[in-house]
Image (cartoon, rainbow, N blue to C red; front, side, top):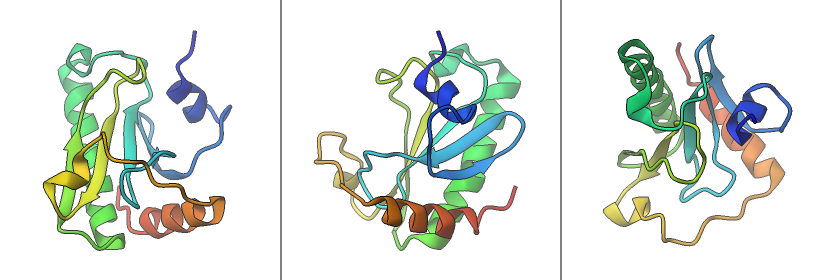
Length: 132
């Protein structure tokens, strides 16, 4: 059965897309820790990041870097935090979170509630800065 991320990639579930190429896909987290919190996933379904082949893993990291640079340009922050937890959805994903303090990357923090208009505006702002 396809994961929720595969359904998002295929357009079966809507998302706020940031960037995409033939192997990777980035979209806003709908339960963000901070404005601009983005998920980056490979288009292939793998549950565990270290089960990816070397080429897919390095490609995912390089794609994530391009997205992180775009987030930094679009969202005021000190840096982009990176987290790979891998327990919430059985599909490899990297969290890119704008942060100013270590506490900004604490997944126990309350999640932000944003309107569809806010998500759309944020996604557009970031996606315009992505250089693939």
